[in-house]
Image (cartoon, rainbow, N blue to C red; front, side, top):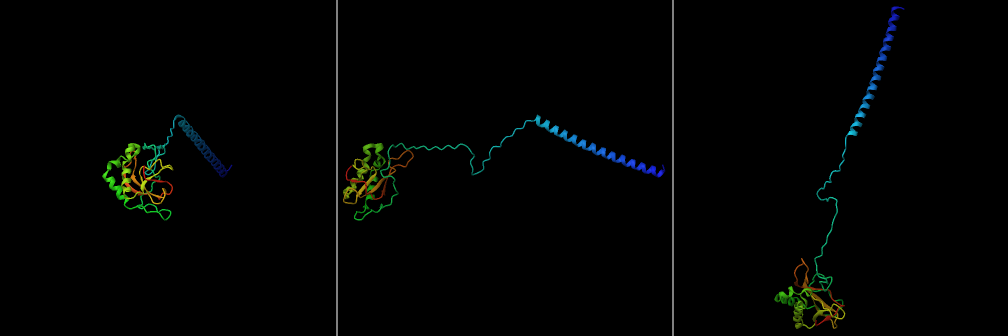
Length: 224
């Protein structure tokens, strides 16, 4: 073997040895990475097995203008102790000053002096206004309405009471009536007591003059 061939053979062997070493190193590196990955997985598994995890929901945050969810309780207490209606004309519209025009012609208008008579009498007898509730004061409570109607009848006999039933056995307790036609029907009615028979927390009773719609069904009576 010549020197050149020996040198060439040695170079080939050295190259093969070098490639073998590189392959071994890469193989070792791959094994090392796999071993490291297994170790990490094992450590993670042991950590999870040895730890207690507690998951809690945070309390709801209530911002301005909102209400936290919950049970809603609605209470409505009625403090009115009266067992019967407190108004003789349900519903009672707001006073108009002249009432509702009659449905037909040929009836008398509501006299304009009535309000002055009612208010003057109330000013002279304030205690009768205060104790005008028949549910509380009984028969004595009629003194105010009777007194106003008697003064009105002194000027015109057409003033009287409003009947609450067909037989006229029951009269309205806070209403004066003016017969505007030839019969007992077709009458003007006026509410003269505001907050009549007040319940707890209501405004006290006071005199008022509230003409109501022209009445064509219920009857008029000159006496109680």
